[in-house]
Length: 114
Image (tube, rainbow, N blue to C red):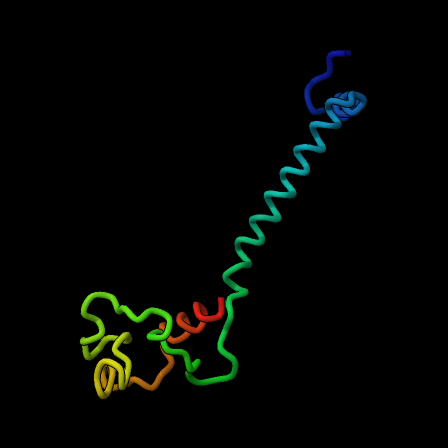
């Protein structure tokens, strides 16, 4: 084998004549392709989570999924885990505004549809 400066076109052409080099290039290419595919799938997985259809509340109770609430949250008047009619009459009103859909409602919907 002649001595060429590294990574010149002549050097690369001569290296491609050896089966070991071609095999190594194929293995590296396959490894890079697998790594890229897995990284794309890992990024896309959260985007494919179930979302409630339509607008408004997702009509999903966290109580049916997990009957135990964290700490004393079931008795706290501002807690989203204090649902109306279950732990208290009005539920967790959190500033007297319980009607907007919260992130907890959507999270419970997504957990229920796994």
